[in-house]
Length: 69
Length: 69
DNA sequence: GAATAATGTAATATATATGTTACAATATTT
DNA sequence: AAATATTGTAACATATATATTACATTATTC
Image (cartoon, rainbow over all chains, first blue to last red; front, side):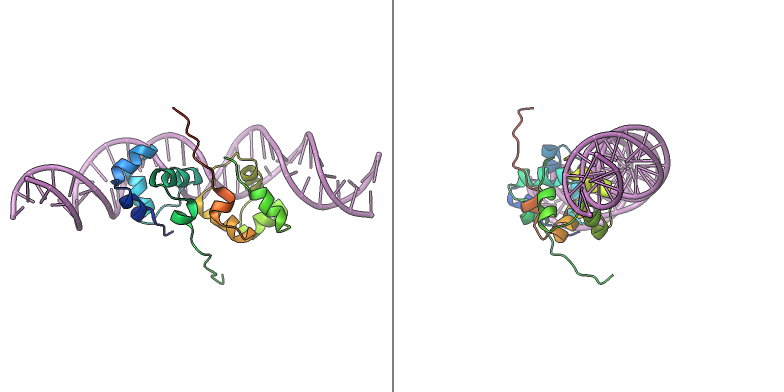
């Protein structure tokens, strides 16, 4: 689950630790989200957006992959 | 956690049941999300968006409420 | 290049999103 | 208005998001 958290975080000059603290979450959670290994909760996505001054679409939107499954 | 799932769902003429089936989730989950009683997962939000032809911002964005806590 | 900060990641624990089953309530159709 | 479809909701079970602790790796600073 790719996203643009890292880019946006660096743009506002925050470390994972700092972003995590502002949001009230663990540094590991931020790390794993940036790595695309977490499927975060909407509320957490919104909190991240608020903190890095972006919208959901800007950070978390991904085009539908039409796998034929 | 308010959102516009219901409106969008009705616009594409789907019942909760039908939307749920297309996404591969339970009708109850859709119901509770529409009622704002669930904090859905990003992946689920995206699947809903794909099915009702909207983006994350259109369906799930909510302005930051600055509660002074 | 050593010291420090920042990040990756693993194991285990906990909280919570979602499923299952079931029934009640409301809307829609005949 | 009865019949049917749609939606709300509760109790309990399961899957998974997140926390905790700890250590390893990579980047940054002196």
